[in-house]
Length: 49
Image (cartoon, helix red, strand yellow):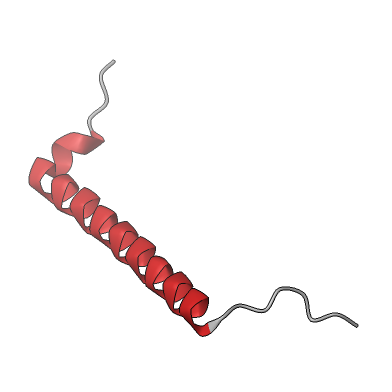
């Protein structure tokens, strides 16, 4: 049974670094949205009629 694609160590490192960068970017976006929501306050919950 074939093992499929086998990555080199450099490719594994590159994939890990890319995954970490994506996770950090996502985390920064979550914190930014949270901060904006806190700054705007409860006004965010008021909907125009």
